[in-house]
Image (cartoon, rainbow, N blue to C red):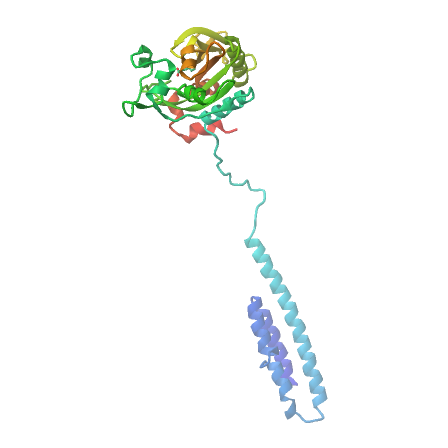
Length: 339
Ligand code: PHE
């Protein structure tokens, strides 16, 4: 009987001292486990006088129940403490600002190219992309610019061989289209072009967007109507165009097209050098010689063509003052074109 009192005392002390639920389990086994001290008391019953056994048995059972309750209570408080510690360690401040992920964006040249395609696709144009390495025939001869033509000089050309060159203009695609397709034709031809030319507004590689329309009764008015719509959507609601006489071997008459300056609204500023107008593209009525070269009867069909520099449009639209910025891939520059 005295032993039992001592065991209770000892068990309670050790249970209190257990610092975590694992240690507590060890203590519990030490007393209540199969080889534990309380279990040993029950096993020792045989050695006790028969008349004392019921009282002793009762006492030990009470002891066991009391200890079980004690262990359960201690275990609950330890588990709660452990859970609190775990939660504190995993503390998450949901009000903290998230880490931003840098998102890529379309290059301004791609952006303007897509916008141009959108504008002209809305007028029924389809897209054709010609090869970047062209033959002399498609780039020049078929475009009414034979070998001895002085206009070849205007386009300082990179030749690959005697016959092949890096195309100097997307106009080469006009011929490829007209050779394969009979009117009505309404084609848009974007792509890279190459010229031995290099300063703040010229780059040896740049992009052009070519347009070609061939059908019965096409006039210069159709060209200007479409370009007005282009200027309105690309630059501003109040943008206007004006045509000035120019020269290209493959168009007759030929024009240079100006758009009213979107920066000053046409009053004159540093961007338009005080004129109120900015040159954006070359165009004209397709020269009958070119139609003939492609087997299209110029008595039956007429057409117009235009070609614009995509970098130039992007520079005007976004106020970029050096064409090199468009190829340097400086993220600080490119970041400004995220929407
Ligand atoms: N190909 C000409 C250039 O690169 C532009 C142009 C295209 C002019 C179509 C007239 C018609 O300068």
